[in-house]
Image (spheres, rainbow, N blue to C red):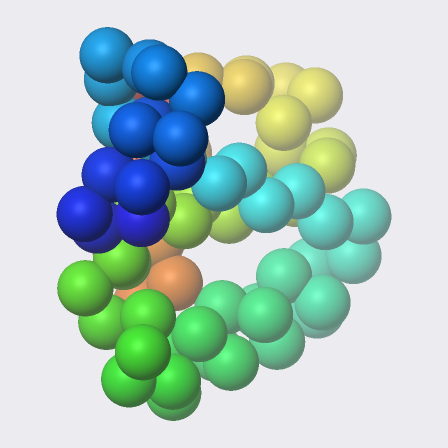
Length: 75
């Protein structure tokens, strides 16, 4: 993802991100931990955003987390 492969594959002029939405907060934390521990994902950190379903319902644009816990906004 860091090299823009999904964008190239689908002919997009912008970068891609994976939005990971979880019903259970615990599963979100487990997935974030798994990616954080896997060095293959280190260069793609900014391409994976995490949020609980309840939080998405309240505000879809703000309060996303990268897998290292850093808070970011969707845009």
